[in-house]
Length: 309
Image 1: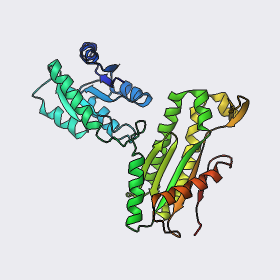
Image 2: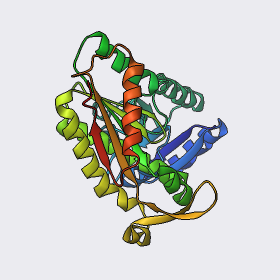
Image 3: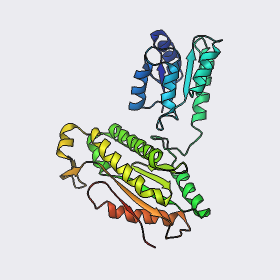
């Protein structure tokens, strides 16, 4: 699949030149004429790389780069800054301080442009474990994190988060909107950890609509409550007004029969080693699966903490 590049520049001629050069080398190119338009496109469909001019009206390249790098879900996207002056060291310093991954002059040769673009993309793809949709750590990192805490004899709590009725939502609203729900869920989790978690907390994305938080036992309940509150407030915005008003959508079961499916909710199963000393990650995940099965039979968003010894 071709890599997608978002070119941001208020000069149509510059955008045209970059588009021609990049498409000739197999890249898919999208355009934006200013920083605000670029942010909208990035949130809607994140590209693999952003090439932005430094000087633009409304929002310049420095501010655009800063906002990208401050957003947990898109900060992984590499940004190449463009300047019209080779000797303008001030703009270069400001761009790098804002988080730009590379800096190019608009008069750059075509071959060097492509080489630099490919180099920046290679660097950004080195973390192969990251989930491709949210860029959060994936399965390998999750297992390593839990195993590390077991080996260090640290007290921990693992929160297994799972969306309820997500398949029905995907079937009706389509995969693109489904992906946006997944991204918003990731954002909710990250915001929650920043607000009520600790600096040592870990967030991972197993895949699909499954997430994991590793925290300390004392914070697990507050984290679960906060995630649920945020989720139940924000997620209804991803429904059409008539579905939101009814409180359900019409979907088909496995036999093809139509049924009423409640709006999306979230289940959080919390496993802690405070009373049970685990020796292996599999023991933790097994406990989590048992609690999630129980939660799935309850209406709405819920959490449960395993207090068994």
